[in-house]
Image (cartoon, rainbow over the protein chains, first blue to last red):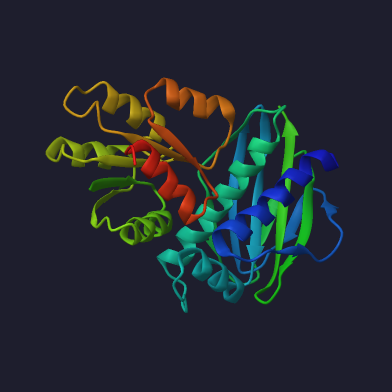
Length: 155
Length: 122
């Protein structure tokens, strides 16, 4: 994955949170690569598969408290527990991010699978995809940190 | 005005519903996918407008749009397609299949209001 393919996901993430949650996240470090194997995630992982002329996935992962703030702003209601709104909201947010990023990758035909949200302490992902994951560390001004992670290659 | 909201995301329906209620529209029914929407439309045909997501399980928005346009009893209902896939081909496909307009996510409340006003000729 080259940088030209990563930037649309960063732009889409910033734009989605700015538009739907009225808060602009920023990067908190340089993106780095993670090859095959275990990848440690935060409490909540919202992911969506990318198909069409590519194969891969994009995900966001963050602590539960951060996700509650994010989805609370998304639906304009306070969320204080792990409930349907929290999980559904995270799914919809990653769906919007992936769709917006795919639209920016004009030379590719990026189609979306249905999103999945997982929650649990100390969860790890095991990747066998041939394309490495690009991990993009990001943060909200007041709600905490999150990672945007993308793995994508042409079919 | 009577509106049918169709989106597999309950939070997205909640967001759209809040905008509609803010516009003074409170006659709103909800469906979680195309099959549910068609089941509602089998009984209730007097909707003034439908908002329909594209990427849904069971029956997606494009299939739903085509089924509605093929049913003479509801074929003329205005439909705004809501999509997170701002891919030109898909939007064009929806317009060709009879979508009245489309709304690209992410959106702000005013974007949704403007699309509804445009479709309803306000």
